[in-house]
Image 1 (cartoon, one colour):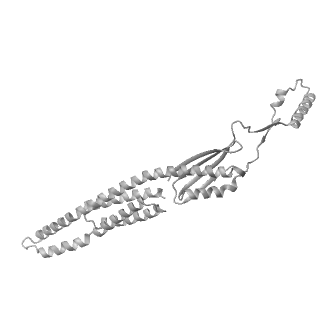
Image 2 (cartoon, rainbow, N blue to C red):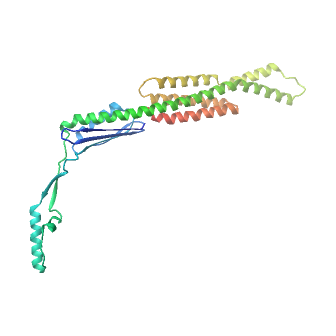
Image 3 (cartoon, rainbow, N blue to C red):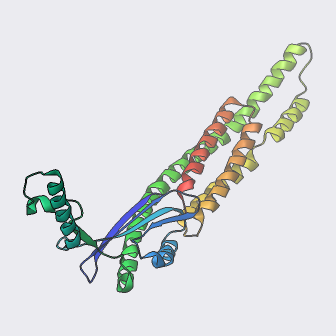
Length: 292
């Protein structure tokens, strides 16, 4: 399930701590962390915060420090020895080549290496650890809020699919008696055509229809399918951990019953309903990849 969260905090020395957390769908919890140089020892603590907030997803956590606007990037220094060496070499070249000219300060400061910037050493988190952990926690809270909002939208979509499945189950139940009557009439007509002078044995015909009714009976599958849908809804309304895996198993069982109904159908309308149910179940299965 996708999510994004960002947070900032000002550290005691004026630097600004910036944290960004992103998540995308993944079957397991997979974390990738990017930390400032010198903060590597906090990686396990940040990962622990992620595990406490999230149970699934590919998580990318970025932590950085931004210097305050008024702060200098580093101390600017004059390399006197290098400047002196430049002057000496230029005077030597002028004498050797007999070239006239003057060496002024504007030319000198443009030469590479005359000025250098003393870079700041890598920072150590030190007292900033508590601020960093709090900032990471705030970013993860925003990720969870975004994922929960997506989850509510996903739940609405799942419920709509379940309603469509139940509508097809109702259609199957309504069609079953009509299918048996149609088959009885079909058998009677075939017997009449084969032996027009022979009366139809209604008892024998009733036994054949009863045999077909038992062979084509889908009541057991329909009852189990309705039970699976009820269990799915019960799980949605609950707060069980690893609900996504449980719902995935329920959809698998629902699909099994739909397959059996289709196999027993011997009727175009019931077959079409079975196919429609399986299409909705496939949508459920795909959506459940995002459910924790």
